[in-house]
Length: 337
Ligand SMILES: [Fe+2]
Ligand SMILES: [Fe+2]
Image 1 (cartoon, rainbow, N blue to C red):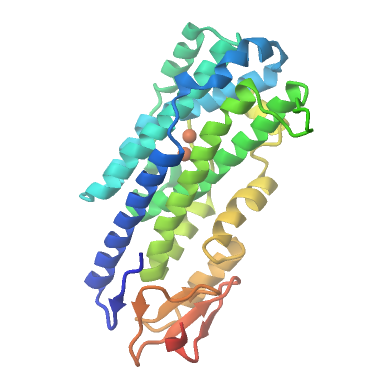
Image 2: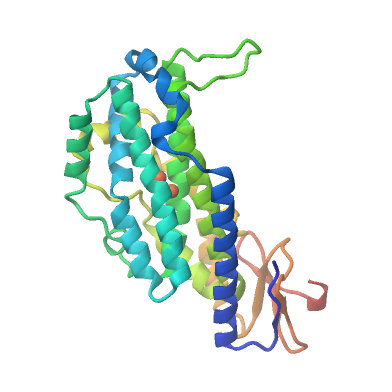
């Protein structure tokens, strides 16, 4: 759906356009979630094989699974942060409730995986979760900034992508610990936990796409704010600051497994997220912010290779293409967009 904003447009007009597009994005998200990602951690058929494969899981992987369970178990704090950031936007608050519901399935998936595989008892996992929940996560403490819907979405892009990346790596690690099982035709099969972890993994991918869409909407109408938000949350980006009962072992095991090493975080998490915003790197983001400040106040910007969808510039508008290196080039023929 394309919203047409006739120029010249006021700040109020642009804000209304953002709200409208954000709402449309949510509607599509909800519909897709219900159609393609409806699953329940208790009902996963992968649980049936966990007992059989449980003894193959290494101690390091067990620590990692405990850690993931802990990080996913403080979902109430993340949801509360999102609702607080939403202010009086009911749509944004609704999104955080749906998102929180999906996140809560993840903690449960790790918990049932540990129990069904014989790696921990129900009591041990409950105790671990209760201890983790004693600490309360806040967006302010995590990022150093007061949450707004835009900032929260910008942070979430990176965090969701890294979570998905962690789950992908762990799925493959567990598959290898299971003896790299393959079907008769040679294709990989992912039984027990290696299969179950694929469900949260897919959710995280959908979350990343959703928050990317939201920031892209802001990028269209308020590029300066969107660029600023991306810079703020990516400057000192780190995964949720959570106090895990197994903190030391978790860090040791995740590093040993190649998760969270700074180079990978830049190459496989930060840069791909920025690429989807039309920028090649954090350096390009810095350049874009510096250059944007030199443009005239009502300059219209679009990402290279992407048309100026939904905005109709008038004769006096200056329309710029933002290149992947963060430069702005004045379009010669804005109507051609
Ligand atoms: Fe999650
Ligand atoms: Fe997520």
